[in-house]
Amino acid sequence: MLELQRTASAINEQLKLSRERYTAVDRVAQQGYIIEDGVMTEAMISTMMVNQYNLAIDNVLSTTYNPPIGAAKVFEEASQQAIVKMKYAIDDLVMATEVLATVSAVAEMAAQADTQTERIEVQETLSTTDMSVDQQDVDNYNTAVKNVETYAQEAGAFLAASNSVDLTGAIDNFAAQNNILVSEYSALVYVQSQDVFAIEWFYGQEGSQEDYAIAVMGGFYDNVMTAEDLYAQKEYR
Image (cartoon, rainbow, N blue to C red; front, top):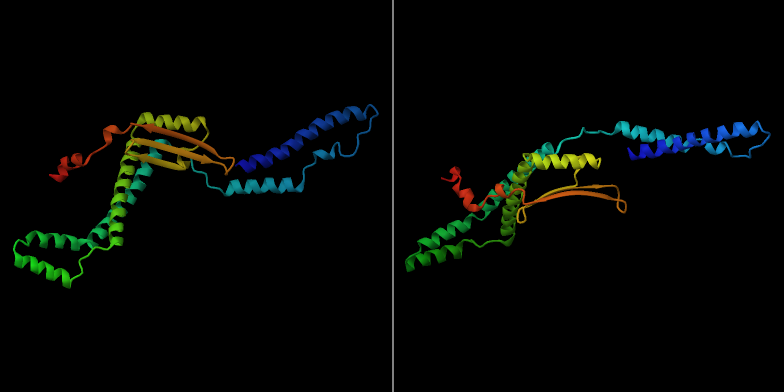
């Protein structure tokens, strides 16, 4: 759209120039004055201008423009995307847990080894069966654990944001005032440790980039759940 504006403006400037010139030329020619070469032809429209303008039109016609979507809908969709990522992370965690299942068996054997004979049996089992833990398996497990937490936080925070009339209203107004689309955000983040929700937009190219952002701190305190809160849920009883 910016290219269409630029190329159309370039042609429009030539049209304005020709109107200015022919008005003056009409007057001075009837007074016996002779205009020099280029006075009028300077207002001519070049082939390059025409080609660039038509190309800009073609680009606009071939571009898919989505209608503006309100902040509530944008955040709801972001929550759904985070839920999908969370479920994948849970699948990864289940797989990583199964890989480390031997640790559970070792824990059980060690707990039951009360006598010297039983301890010798545990020792023999460990000497014949590799029950050591591979660091890569642990890394995979830890990554999955962290991802589940991160995506669960995002899913909950984005859904809470979509239900906040004050927040979505403020962001919709901000977007309208700055002529930006909420759905074109460049970053949407929630940091639980600081209870910070932020959305940011980047427009333009490096060196001429425009940056818009809104951040809210402490807006989701009532939605935060501790581990104790989770265990208090009826699903755990």
